[in-house]
Picture 1: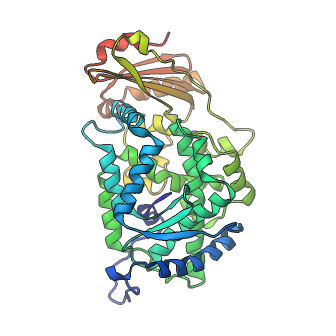
Picture 2: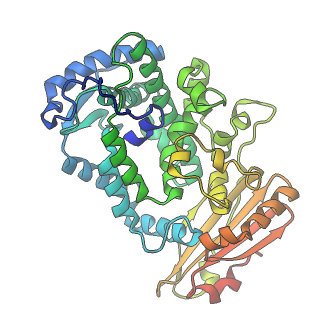
Picture 3: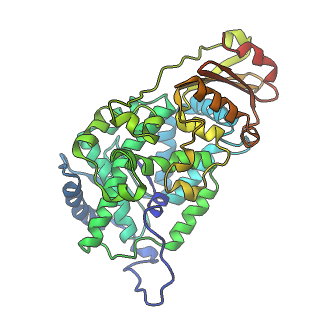
Length: 427
């Protein structure tokens, strides 16, 4: 799992100028990175501490290594190709452009690689069950925190294998988001509790946990990413931690360990939607539980005519609907404190949805989304929000919004594809 060190910055304030501050050993010294011996010694410190914090034992040794940025780039490219493949990835990008979640002129793949290379400090690979620290990453408190987070992934993986956990959600982005919230929320919780213990027991010096220069570099990296994408990167860490304690604030989640029974339930019967993450009572409380409804958008490639092909089929979820109709998207800084800006009245009555994207041989693009809501009033509120000027400006390809009872259909098309819209309308 990739740790974005920017997420750590959400939990610990940056250093202030202090004339009396004593620098950390090796701080700012590029030669103070890890070699294999130093990395193995650090694992020997952190692993038993995590066992005590979580109350679970490591069932097998955890291996670790030092990796170059070139090695990480090769890993990231291979993982992207294995998970999506070029064809599906292109379809996903067509959907993101039509929905207004990604500008047409942005190369998402290159943008993400650039951002990850600037922000990643280390990662755990569940396929090889190995932890990697980046070559040249300085030893010190930040490295310890990254390792606590990533090694918690290794501990979770030994009890609840992560590869099949994610595989069960593949193909439904909203369900994948919910699964990531469990996994990243678990590791973030362990990291936060490790931080508390570290300060109390002098494992780490208090007040000297993050480099202000590093935070600045990470913020610049995030500035290059559209806010809709930033939300998907940051929120699993923050909202996942909050979800695992049954709801509350980011500060409560940082101090309170999840109940063992609840944590095991989340890994064995995970939440199925972003709605259940944003509103934890819709997962944890039997009386208010609200699993997503299945919504079918049939493939109308044949009806569209020769040259048209379905290239993507997915789910927006409540969080996707919120990103679509928010009058103002939360800033990256606001997102580091959770999804408050995306718990919107107009998207909180979400019941289920599905969309299908089409592309013509000449490059024209269309998207049909069908959303279902808990009530006709919820559907009307969502449909009205779709007409807001700020929404139309951010999603210029949204052509039609049609409400029928508690169902709202959305039709998107670029200029070349608009003529084919009539053939996409729901029967």
